[in-house]
Length: 278
Image (cartoon, rainbow, N blue to C red):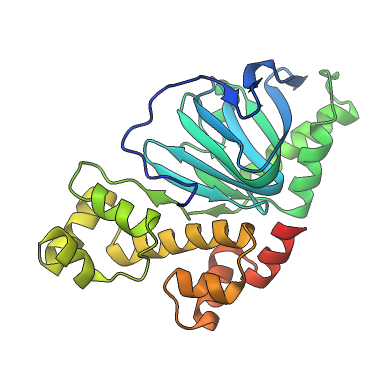
């Protein structure tokens, strides 16, 4: 079972509670600027943070480890080369794949609107990584023009120009495709084509294509590629070897899998695999 689950609808359970009975709201949030909070959490393997939301926009970054995040609209797997931007008031569920070190920023709702309007993966450059780490060391707001204030200003400017990544797995609107999408993604039938999908739904292949465009806004081929990428990131982070992962996500040719992975994440799976295990 993959950590990134396709939601029917997120519902609130034990708010702000994480594995180990550490209340999330008891974790210390620092305020290095009037419009910015920060939070650092080291999560044991498999930690799950139940459904919650924030009044601020959140840049969710793991300096080590990989995170799976699910909202009502879909799910993301967040490698440590990226962060996930979550706008204000968006309910989400987070799970650590392996141990993870969360280094997160909360941007006031007023400032958040200058960044991104929807959940999106943000590429984290070496400079952005160091800026995030440095800003998390600032404990109190500093005067305008001070070194700490300038670091925060630079961080916000770098975020505005950071590359964005469109890899996420949308959840179908309506009910007709949800059983199929769960069957493909969560049961590992990532090698299914249109014929298998049509047989599963007892419809023809043209109708499958039409439903995907209508209910998810993407073609079946695009959705399946996204599913394969998310599964690959999770399995590589869990320590599976590249050949095994490429076969499991439906690629008989590991070279084709590596090319697809590098195109989307900027590094080949061999590099990502080493980074995830170190």
